[in-house]
Image (cartoon, rainbow, N blue to C red):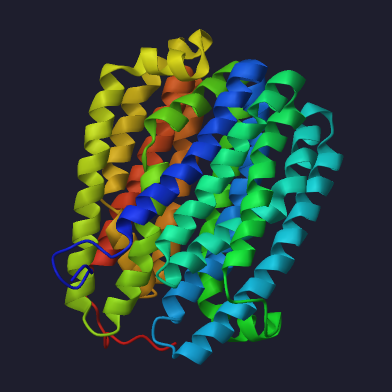
Length: 412
């Protein structure tokens, strides 16, 4: 058997790793293209516009994807299909709305940043719905389809690289990324046998409470991150902001590993929790231990070759940011051990505690950035962001490991 109830890893984990590797490669490719074609200043602008996508992506997962996975574990086949169909319909509407909001924000902001926001808004609905397909594929036990779908995005993006090099503009760089998202989104829609059904009202009535807590937690993350970036923009130059982004891209493997473990891990933990809390808890420890080993190994390699890695991937102008590797790696090691406990806490619906942990981490990060970035520039900013994230991770571990007070079965 290959599940979390025993001593083995969840079924679909290899596909989760491959899927997230392809997905992260597209995001890394966007950063590399922007860094090499547009320089540190251009990368900083693209990064800020890309953050709008990350905000919308987190909200979609909080409102739709994660509540669906957690609450559908105990449903029969017909009810599960109905929940999925309603979720798809609601996500379509939310994706289009997000694109409109980002486009209007770009129009209000104006300038180079405003144009970048308007450009990424064009591709936003396709990118968001494509991410939902990933969750649905794993929820239905078809990790291979998810990996192939994200690989298609990467292949199309690579095919668009000559166009981006030829145009040498922010729009062309974002178009290379967005065309892959659109192609992959259409392909995923054709492969899924579930179609939009039901009403958005049905989804909100059945999942509103859990989705509301998850959304509130993510909104705290958004507010904290945006407040931190506003401070960073005020304290750091565009080049330093771009260098900080490049360092996190290379030296923060949890951005790849966390979704790779979550995609197959959350459905598995939720299913096992229906029958055995002890089995789900063992699985959380196994996932966290695996994550810790992988991140520690990567961190060692990154610390030994920080400057050549930055120069090779982004160009020699970024080599001076090698000192950011240490604070980022230290935070990543602590964060890595929280992944399994975070999944267990979500499956147990300990949402208020998770919200409190996220609030504490965001406030800590914000306060530390004021102090450390002012005194030590991008290195201080990296330490502040890592310490805040690590504080949140420690709290999440405590929440997931806490004894269960009531019965294991969670009311859906």
